[in-house]
Amino acid sequence: MFDLSVRRSFHTSSCRIAGRRRLRGEGTCLYSTRLLRARCPPLLDREDAAHDHPPPSDSLTTDYYQELGLDQDAPVSEIQDRLTVLEAQNRSRAVFKNAQGESARRSLAWIAEARQVFATEDSKDEYDIRLRRRPAQVDWTGRAWNYYHVGDYGAARIAARKAREAAPSDPRPWVVSAWIELAENNNKQAKAYADEALIADEDKSAAVDVQEVRGVAFEVLGNHDRAISCYRQALKYAPDTYKGQLYLRLARVLSSDESFDACLEAYSLADNLGSDTREQINQIVRHEVTDSSSGRLKNLKGKVNARDFLAADRGMLLGIIASCMRACELEARGEELNRLADRLRDQPRPYRDDYSFINVFGYFSAFSMPFAIIGLVIIFQVGGSLPSVLRTLLWTFFVINTLLLAWYICSTLEYRSRKKAYEHDQERSRITREQASAVKEEAWKIIRSIRG
Image 1 (cartoon, one colour):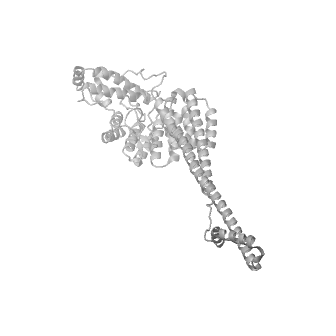
Image 2: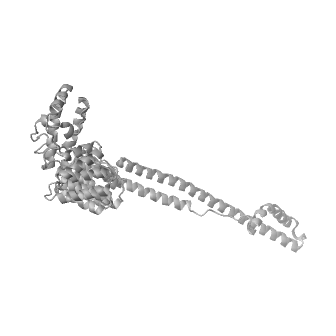
C-alpha cells in the first residue's frame, strides 16, 4: 500500500477557469513511494508575488466558510489558526502565471479579508447576519478541494461529482476527483478520472496538474514507465518553482542511476528549489550514493563536477561522495582482513599418531635407555671375557634404543613447534577478525551518518 504523502495546497472557488493546481503545501498528505515526505517549495520572489492579489469580490457576498473550508461554529481563534494554515498552502500555488496561480492569489486575497472579518466574535456575528442575505454562489470544484484537504473524502467526492456535472469539459473537476480516489486507494477509478482530465485539457492549460495526477495513478498501479513519461510531460509545462516537486516524484520511480540524474536536475534549479523539497531530494541522494560501489562513486563525482550548482549544493554532494568513497575503502580493507583471518584459521592442525609402531617404541626407549647404558658399561668393564654374541646383542640394543630415543625426542620437539605455530595462527586469526569488524563498523558509521 502506498503512503500518500505529498501534501497539496487548498483549492478555492474563484473564477470559472481558476484552481486546477494539484495538492501541495501543508495540507492533507497524498503520495510517496519511498516513505519520504515531499512538500512543495515555498513561495519565492517573482513578478506576480502571492501578495499581488487580483481584486476579490465584495467580502459581504463571499462565503468564506464554504470557499475556505472554515467551520462556521468554531470560535474566531480557531478560524484564525485555520487561515494561517490555508495561507501557507495557497502560497505554493501562487507562483503559477495561469488560472491555477490566479486562483491561489484570489484565495490569498480572501484569506486576508477573512482575517479582518473574523477578527472578533462581534465582527463574525455581523458577517454571519449579512451572509444570510447573500445570493447563493457555489464553486463545486473549490469545495471539493477544501473537503479533500480536511480529509473529508466522502463530501469531497460528492462536491467533485457536482463539479463534473456542472462543467464536464473542464479538466479541474476531473483532476480533483482523481486525487480524491487516490486518497481512498481507489487507484483504477483515479486513473479513469485522470484520463478524463487529459481529454478535457485540450488547450494544455492544466497540463502540469493533469500529467502529474496521471503519473501518480500509473505509479500506484505499477506502470512505472508510463508514470515516468507523465512526470516528464509535466516538467515541460511546469514553472521552475514547481519543477523540484516533479523531479522528486520522478526520482522516486526511476532506476538508481536515472534517479540520481533527476536529483541533479532538481539541484540545477538553484534557488527555485524549495527548502522542503530540497531536503526530500537530499534524502534520496544520500540513499543512492551510499548504495554505490567505488567505481560508481567516481562516475557520480564526475557528474556533479560537470554541472553548475550552488556552492552549498556542490559542497554537500561532493562531501557525501567523498565520505562514501572513504567508507568503500574501509569496507574493502575489512574484507581483506577477513580473508586473511580465514587463511589463518584454515591452516592445517598439526597431528601426531602416538599409537603408531615407531612412536610406541620411541616412547618406551626412554625407559629402556638406562638398561642400554648399563649394558654398554658392562661391555667396557668386563671386556673380552663376555661372549661375542652377548657383546653384539648389548651393542645392538644400545644403538637401536639410542636411535629410537633420538627420533622420539626430535619428533616430539617438531610436533610441539608445529602446534605452537598453529595456535599462534589461530590467535592471529581472532585478532585479525576483530580488526576487520572494527574497520567495517567504522565504514557503517560513516554510511549511517550520511543517511541520517
